[in-house]
Each structure stands twice: as C-alpha cells, then as structure tokens.
Image 1 (tube, one colour):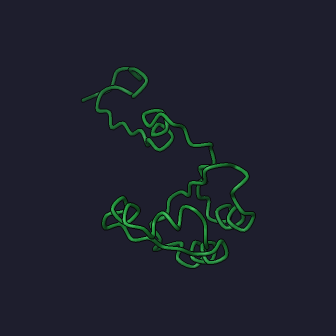
Image 2 (image 1 turned 60 degrees about the vertical axis):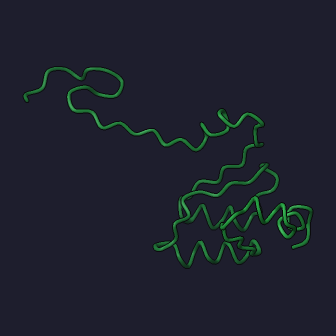
Length: 107
C-alpha cells in the first residue's frame, strides 16, 4: 500500500507521531479473515473508516457475521464532538434508575 499517509508514517515526523505504537498494514481480505478467524480472541470491537464510501464490501460482510460496529462517518475537526461517537455510557445505580426513580424498593 503506497499513499501519502504511509509515506508520512515512514519519515521521522510520522515515526515521532506514532511513538511506540505498532503499525500493522494488511489488505481488506486479510483484515476480514483475521476478524472471522480470531473472533473469540480478537480485541477488535469496532472499525473506523473516514467515509461511508471507503468501507469495502468484504469488511461489511465480515462485521455483519460477527455483529461488530463500523464507524463510517466523516471525521469532524472538533475533537470533543468527534469523541462522543466513541463514548460508551454506563451507569450503576443503587436506589435510582439512570433516568429517574423507579419507585420504592426494599433496602
């Protein structure tokens, strides 16, 4: 794969940006196969593409079989708003439901 992003990651500035993160390059077919084979051990919960048109059909098919999420929205320039897409809200109530009181309960 040869494009402006891979070329940037190969130079000093790109390596500094990545720090100690490992860069893994694979084709769409290899990714789909890895998703299907390592379903139980893979730590891939969701995939992210920069635009809906960029998601290959083979990836759609693999994630559909596994029930995985593909984020395929256009990336926003405002990071605080962009991060809302990745927020997994959880609530552990004791006496009240997250959206209000569910009524009297014996304690």
